[in-house]
Each structure stands twice: as structure tokens, then as C-alpha cells.
Image (cartoon, rainbow, N blue to C red):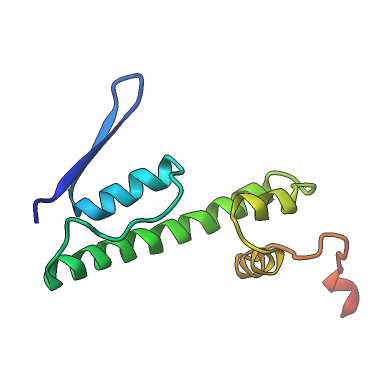
Length: 122
């Protein structure tokens, strides 16, 4: 299976190049970025080894993007004490319950209306 590469550039001439991308993952990534409706199965990878290589590379990308999405969610929530969590959940394509689990995982208060002074409790 011939692997592909991707080049990401900016208007000022900076660019990054990534090599050894499985062709099916490259196609899936392009379709995801372009918001193409309908996910296609792998077409280039046919052998067991090629398919497992595609699965492995896809899994690493998904894990990395999931972690990145969580950090972006936390950054958006920290922009203001009045950040619109409904809009954050919609952008993240997740239900509010999952958003609140992400916020809690990263130490963000899930209920901003309840602020408890822990020193007053002692």
C-alpha cells in the first residue's frame, strides 16, 4: 500500500508536512474536514496488514483529537464565567452530561451558581 503525505501551509509561507499517512485515513480526514456526508469504508487497504495499519493510525488520530477537543472545551469554558456551555456542547457534538463530565475531569465547576467557601466550612 502506497502511503500518502499531507502538507499544511499558511499564507505567510509556513508549512508542515506529514508523511506516511494511510490512503484511506487521508481520504477520511479530507472528507471530515470538508463535512462530506456519508462515511465510506476503506478502499485502498485490502490486506489484513494494510487494514490493521489503517486502523492503528486512525485510532492514534482519534485519541489525539479527543484529547485536543477536551482541552479546547476547557479553554472555551475558561474564557468567561458566563461562557455559553450549551454552545460549547453543541460545538463539541456532545450531550450536556458528557460536557459536565469533561469539565469536572479538568477541575472546572459544573455549577457556577453554587460557590462554596470551603474555609467557612472548617
